[in-house]
Length: 127
Image 1 (tube, rainbow, N blue to C red):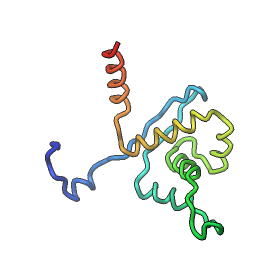
Image 2: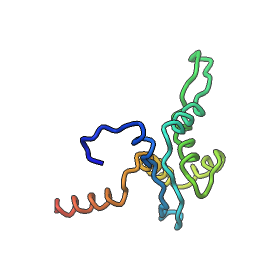
Image 3: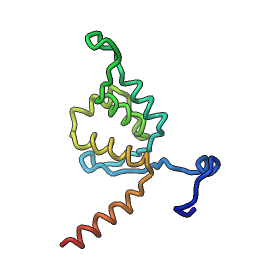
């Protein structure tokens, strides 16, 4: 499909826009399988992360819990519970941040290999 084409609803229904990828985690010396999440799933993560705060007189969003819920919903293997993610918080901070970022990238189906090649090319050109 060309860039200047206007998409129809049928076109949108056919598009596969959520990626899945095995990713090697050096700190863990192994791979995990991550998947992008849909907007509906992201909204569910936000809804699951709200709590009533009597002092504020209403619902408050716990942004840390949003990240936890995104990791839970986006990690296919191993399948994690909320307690598992909380336990993983005692491990490398960089890994959980990396997992969250990769899930969000897969949610836009950015071709990560192409992005990495572009970054390598750009850094080689700036030398």
